Image (cartoon, rainbow, N blue to C red; front, side, top):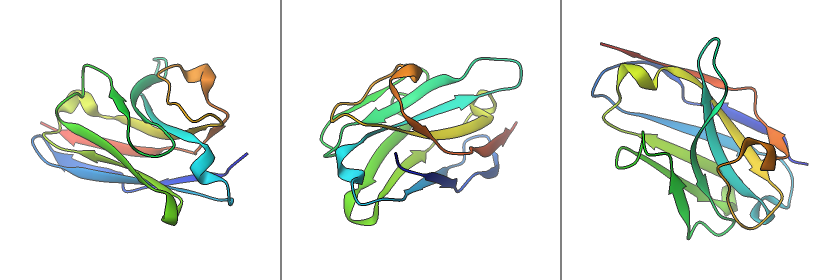
Length: 124
C-alpha cells in the first residue's frame, strides 16, 4: 500500500480557486489509479474525480465537471485537484485515494489507501 498526504485546503470565497495536492510514498505510485472524494458532516463520502495510472484518462462527478481538473505527476509521486469557480456547496473534507489498478474508479470500495483529508471551505 501507499501512504497518502493531502495538502492545499483552506478558506476561499465563492468563485475562487484552490489546488489540492496529494503526495504518495513508495516506488510503485505509477501502478496506482488515483481518486479524489469529499465528505460533509453527517453525509457519506462522495466521488469527485479519478485518473488512470498514466494520466491519460480522467472522469468527474457531474457536480464538478468543467470546474475541477485532476492531474498527476508520476515522477513526483503526486496527484492534484485544481478547483476553479468554487461554490459554497463544494465545502467539504477532501480525500485522496489510491487504487492498486491501472484504471480509475468512482466507487469508494475500489480504493485501497486513503489520506487523512484536507478541509476546503468556500464562503458565499
